[in-house]
Amino acid sequence: MSTGPAAFTVGYGGRKPDDFTKLLTDAGVKVLVDVRLRPDKASVGSYAKAKDADKGIAGLLAKSGVAYVSLPELGNLFLDYDDWPTRYEQFLTLAAPVLFDRLERIDGPVCLMCAEKRLCECHRRHLAAHLEQAKGWTFTHIE
Image 1 (cartoon, one colour):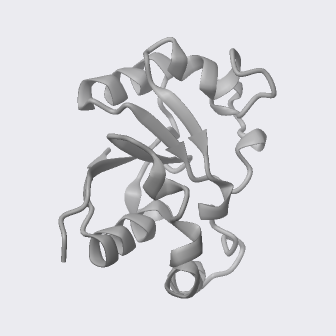
Image 2 (cartoon, rainbow, N blue to C red):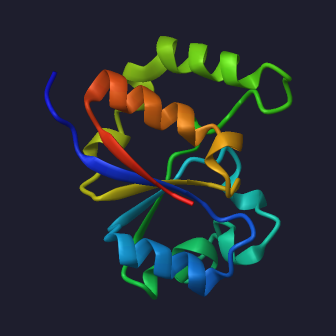
C-alpha cells in the first residue's frame, strides 16, 4: 500500500474561535474540510457556513490563512440512531470510492472538522480510520 498524505481531525465544540484557529495554524493545516452534514446549522455563528465567504467559518479561517471546504457528503446521516457508528462504517465501506473523490483532490495538509470536540464521540474518527486503512493516510487528532 502506498503512503497517503498526513492529515488532521478536530472538533470545534467548546472552543473559542481564536483558540480554534491557533490550533489549526500551529499544526500547519492549510485546508479545513468541514465534514458536517448541515454546516449551515451550527449553534455558534462563528462555526456556521455562511452564504457570504467573508462571514462564518470561512471568514474566520481566512483571517488565519486557512482555506475552507465543505463536504457534507461525509456527514453523519445516522446520528439519530443508537447504532450510528456501525451504520456509518457500513456506509463508508459501501460508498467510499464516491465519497472520497473530492477529498482526495484537495491539496493539504487537510484537517477534517466536525462539531464534537472529543474524537471518541464523532464520526470523523471513522472517516480517519477508513482513510488510514484503505488509502494509507496518517492522521493526528487535535484534541
